[in-house]
Image 1 (tube, one colour):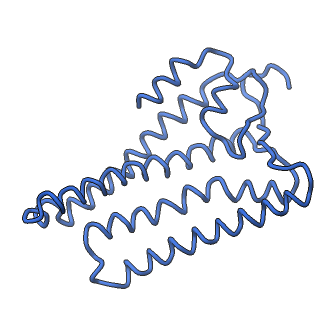
Image 2 (tube, helix red, strand yellow):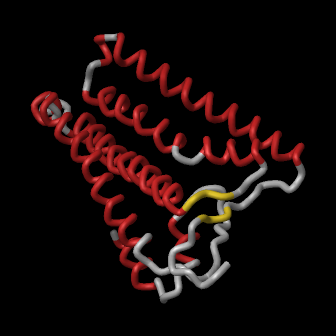
Image 3 (cartoon, helix red, strand yellow):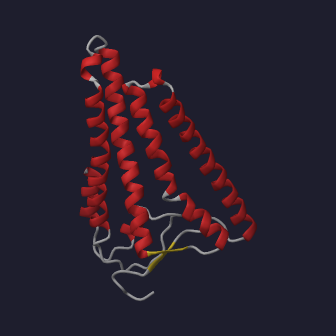
Length: 200
């Protein structure tokens, strides 16, 4: 590859060189992906249909069940398509898009898990005040804050990562576009950016 500062595509790590192992990988990923979708769909259906589950804890669980399929849907389908087609490439724009959505869902999940921990803390340590502290409006605001914070975090990560000039090749040692692998391709010393991202 030439010393272009922005490659047109990236090469993703193949799990296997033989066609049989690639098909086995596709089957394994498909099974895990469908199981995750089914599990989250069952959680969503149960919470939506049973009015006894319309409590703050299950509201946050509903949001988590919405986020989880999003995070796996950004990486696994591309990995399965690459296994079937035998190609290991992803375009620069495709990599940036995959990176953006993956980080949105993972960051929002992280913030939502923090909120869920706070919900359980209030339920255990302040049970008499639980209904007033965790009312429906507060729960909606907290969930919206988790989604919004995940989005803001991702905008910062994506703009920071994809503004770096890349001259160390275009091969990523991962089956999807991941931050540390992209930073390894940077021409400049990305140490300060990595430290800033880790601090954030």
